Image 1 (cartoon, rainbow, N blue to C red):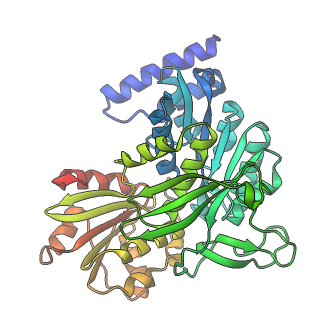
Image 2 (image 1 turned 90 degrees about the vertical axis):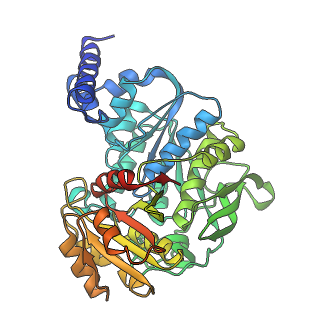
Image 3 (image 1 turned 135 degrees about the vertical axis):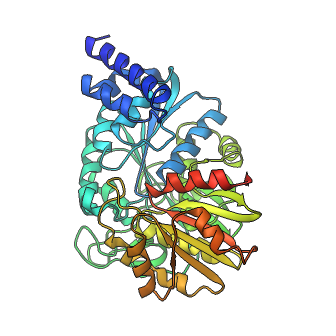
Amino acid sequence: MGLRLIGAKAASTLSAWGLKYVFRRPAANFPGKFALYLDPQVISHTAGKLSKGSVIVCGTNGKTTVNNLLADTFEAAGHSVICNRTGANLDSGVATALLRSTPADWGVFESDELWLAKTLPQLRSDYVLLLNLFRDQLDRVGEINTIQDSIVAALESSPNTVLVFNADDPLCAAIAARVKNRQVAFGIDGSLGLSQNTVADGQMCQLCSGMLEYEYRQYGQLGAYRCPTCGFERPRLGYRAQGVLLDAQGFSCTVLEAATEHVGGAAAEDIKEAATIHAPYSGAYMVYNLLAALVTARLAGCPADAFQQALNAFNPQNGRLQRFVVRERQAMLNLAKNPTGFNQNLKLIAQGEDPKAVALFINDKEADGHDISWLWDVDFEELAQLTDTRVFAGGIRKHDLQLRLKYAGIDAQRIEGVADVLEHIADIPSAHLYLIANYTALPSVRSEMAQLATKEV
């Protein structure tokens, strides 16, 4: 053990103790950041704690949910796991998780898309799971091609890593086309019959700039696509969700597995049933999230019943699709930090029972991105079409949000927090409450909900 690593471990332990017991703050990032300053290769030097391997989960939406469910599945299958469960997805968060944990079988780590280039070269993970790519935090990361270039470079630095990717997303498929890593493609077979939003991020072919044509779209740019100009198309699926039944109460589907695991895989007669999924979660994006977790768990050797066991017990308690009972009314809290995420939340709200109260919270701190012009790409007009629905605007940028909602035809009231919303809807005790918050707004809204709630569902 080198002196740098010894110093990094000592500094990490001391800083974690101070944050926890003196400052009463979470120690998810800073101990690893301090350790990386003393030993820039600390992730590589501690990766030996993982006796069987590691998985990195990245993508714009759904990382924390998929990461934690995947870790639960490994544990249900009898494996010990090191995981950055709180969503600390920079290299410092991964380093903190490794430094503060005892040796384990597997590491399951969420990674910010741009920071994959820092974590993967050190971890040399067995699998990288790429969920989706959408325009997000443009003032921090730039356009999607910047993220794609970074992910490609990360994968090229770890040639033995298997890329598990959402083939229904042409932006993910474009990455797969650029790297030589072994690949496993997954997607949904057949249209879910959902109405489409006006904005999609990948409508043009990245190979020739032609317009993509779709047999069907699920949401955003996800679906069965083909470029008529150059022939770029959705890769053949190694795993597919088939027969998806989706409603407000949840979904079920059958997952089929091809005999081979690479893009351009098996013929139809070589496909077999791998598993079935029954989940109390609605929304097309959750179909993709759970499919991604199941596929990766299967590739790592976890049985299908371990996944369903983990799914049945899954209770993230991190503000993602978290349900409460507040003053005898049902309430749901969820994260949305970009147009696609918001649009999918609006579809969930539309499926719910009337009457409804919808509270939206938007901050513009550094982790959110200071530029909130993306609000104009959200289809709030769909929210305006709902009847018996009251809408509220909160967060640091509530005035900007209220203005955007006004242009969508919504007369939203400004609020300071959840208690304020509850006062405004006291006259409609049967109203279901939906709270949607972006990244830095979510913890405070969740904390207030936890204080006000009589129980969690």
